[in-house]
Length: 212
Image (cartoon, rainbow, N blue to C red; front, side):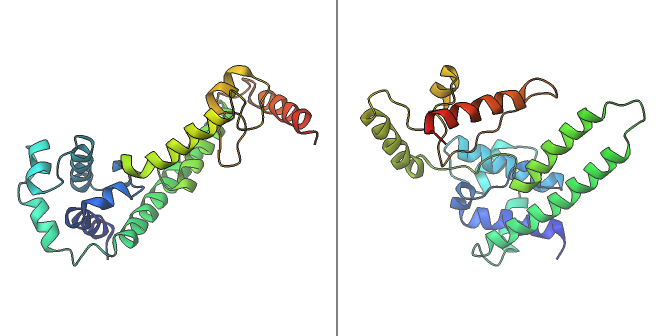
């Protein structure tokens, strides 16, 4: 099965079961074909506008789209049950293409170029590849509200105390709630801007606070 076919099968599954759009980790950048990327973008727009994801809605959002394209996809899709399999195949193809492009980028480094900039870009690209997505999947309000309410309740019961371990930096503590077990915080900046020094200061403060 070709990559374009997997993209078509996934989109057909989304039209059969629009709830998939709230579960998938795909973004439009994962789609290698312009036609399927365009349709996925229209579907996401429907979700963001809170309108039904169907033939009429997606073609209304993108009037230049072939009106029969969505219906053809549904007719050629056996069902929505295997959407995760299609999703994985799309991500794998995107990763292969991205690795190929990254290889070409690194191979094109000139002798007078700053290697630190290429390393930083390579690290960023590899991190994105390892997570499999450029952004989080769309989630419904109903699915995130219970966790949000529990977090608000926990913060209220702490009476102003941090839920996590203090970083030693007041502004950062206010933004993150301190160092928490279920959080993964990435500190990003250009080379030689103090990332390592900041991380070391946070680690030292955490060791002092916890006595470890």
